Image 1: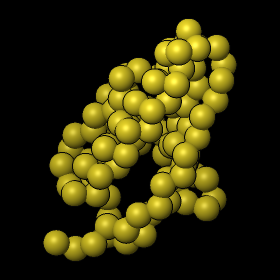
Image 2 (image 1 turned 90 degrees about the horizontal axis):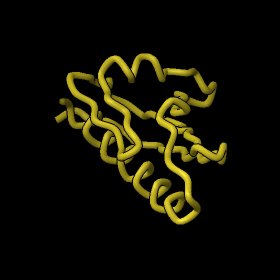
Image 3 (image 1 turned 90 degrees about the vertical axis):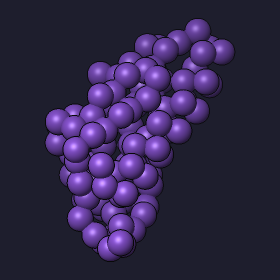
Length: 98
């Protein structure tokens, strides 16, 4: 796994963990089928591309054998719970050459 994807997997895992913790107290669970990833300021949906390399569960995300090119990236992550409540976060980061 390249360094950039590892960083994204960690950030996605943290986001899902935080969202899960707040929902548990409210009697709801994460609905992984609602997970979406939008790329860049245009909001291009790259969810299906990510799912080719990732396993998304209520506990988090694990991505393997995926790569990101060098440069600046912006991802907006969206997910909802079983009660229909929605959460989103935007991550901006740069992948530098090793």
